[in-house]
Length: 380
Image (cartoon, rainbow, N blue to C red; front, side):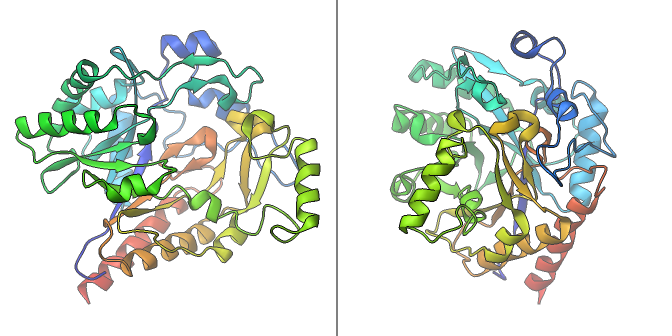
């Protein structure tokens, strides 16, 4: 890929300030740091807690935090943040404060867009046995979609908001869950045109029916979160696929709670990040596929024994992972020129680029190094 500049975009979690709902569910003053600091090692060689370094235990109600995050990200090759957005319908929004403060503060100088995390919140994702619904994702139809667009419009109009061909970029976590998807797309595109844009640059995330995405001309990209499964290749069982011994192994693992189903899991799933990188084969399945990468993963602070852990994640292995993805993207110049990094600051999932107390700035230094290398290749 010599004609296109690749942009590195990182998911951004806004759950670093108290809200009444989290106070009620998890205790007064709860933020993502609550889980991070109480994390414990679950097996020999498992390091927890992993704690922040340069930025500390920040509170996103403090404006200077987002200013420093933006400076740090841009200095190290991040081209923009993808803010998770929690719009539940009926005008209910959670954790919207950081983005709203950012909109008003031009000193937070980094491009951004939104990912609508349209997902019902359940306690099971926090490692508790009660899978009750905390807050339900609802879809209101035309009037609700218009209200949602009206909320988003000031962000879309901001000069920092990421746009492609005069279309604001808008990610949807679970696009197949929208019961009247074509109505939603039609309303958003129509209102965007009325506002002076050429539509919305829709990007899907979790998708089970890829044909839906491939055939829909209004959806421009699909984030490859299947990278997590690819990184587990060859590590899920001892015995070969579909063999009798493998079937017996899987049954025995399920009996002791070692399963992919979070609700039934009684012990963590553990994989080797370095082996995953070594075995990783990346092939884009279609022209809308957007490569996704992750530097580390250990959600035991949030999910305890129900967690999934990639041990042996290091900046050196992260660099190999990122280079493999860039190489495949450069071999597919027809695909969207983006690398989606999961994530900038999901600390309770052990999934972050921000400096930590073990490696400092090394996670970010890898991005800067690979970014500079790919820019040199473009100029050759």
